[in-house]
Length: 138
Ligand SMILES: [Zn+2]
Image (cartoon, rainbow, N blue to C red; front, side):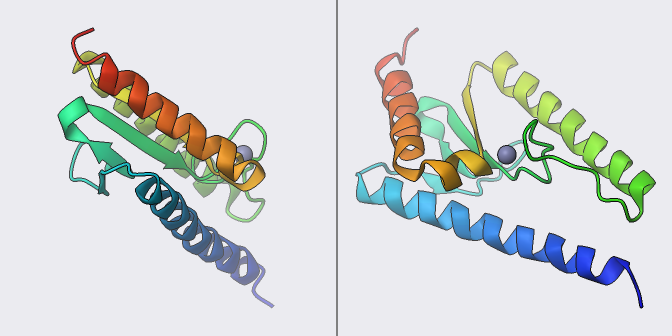
């Protein structure tokens, strides 16, 4: 039996559940009157962007972004995953640095935050947006 098959299926599931999470967050924000764009063609393709206020929000999958609590290296093709996930981490750092240098406000949300405390995470996002909206000239 091909050992890699179940693992790969899990990764595909991860990707699907990730976009479901993003949709859930988007809907909740929209309902609360927050207007934004999704998957904007900005550096790193932020999940949520309000360009007017220079706000970008990334929803990071615990697996693909190596969350300190849930991130892990799959045992199958370990070397491949070390490289792949390492590149992702480096990319996240580059993205953070880019927005910082450009004077944008960046927020990263972990997948597990949404799963563990959905309302709290929505409030956190709204708080972040409102704070930077109101500090437009800071
Ligand atoms: Zn996590």
